[in-house]
Image 1: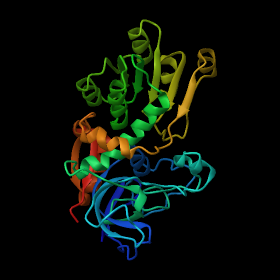
Image 2: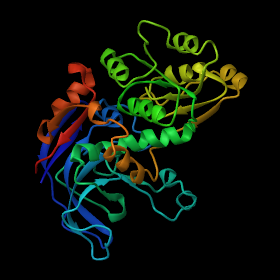
Image 3: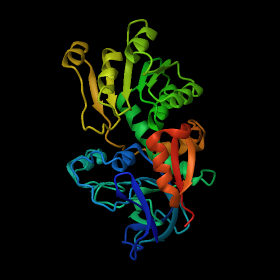
Length: 346
């Protein structure tokens, strides 16, 4: 079968790899139809940090995906051959302290599709535990199914922030997850959502989604602009989604006293900077988003019922075989690229 592999920094190749031959008794085999390209994939592509795990080449990325069930294990009752499914890439152990506490996203034995040591979905077939697959309504496309994963991260971030009706919210970074958080915050009842971003076309996307203020951080101080927009008060909740060294502190600076900062972005420099004077004086609550947990049961109806607009975020689709071009465009931010989804007809 074919797979799109990262073979060196900024170099992708399509190669033939062995197809899975067995399906465990509680597993399913999925023929992958759509794969979203995530910001963490771009970190790997650029040769940036991969946490504590070493990245060995060749490496098959891809953790945002949907497809069709091709085979099921003998003990599987939750899926049938032919089901159209979105797949949660997280495979926690299910029995450690964190899993039993309801925090499987923190499982120290976690296996995660498309992370170092675990092949991802940028290939024709994958085998996953059956409980990670969620049947999609017939009206949902495979591309929409793939984007449920980042929508889940956005929803988990919003849950951490505990946005209330009539709160004010700031989102620092308007990549796909940041724009999803902005939509969800309005859906949750925020009276104002302010955003800051350095890529011009992302600001236009945010404006089309109805944010209260979109600040170009290259031309204006985002902290001053957002604080001024709140008449000096600051926002109730600030989400850092840019993954830059300076943006965590910007999120803290735009918060009001007693506010909450949720750090969702992944910094390529493996840093998260806050000045103690700001965070201590304001008595801020700082939370960090680690992937997501138990969200597909909510993200599927969010999309199916058109409560959020994820189609507007998907600006480009490419065949899997042209994945190298997809990564190149994302790397350079050209052609007003937003979310990219790879389509696999194999």
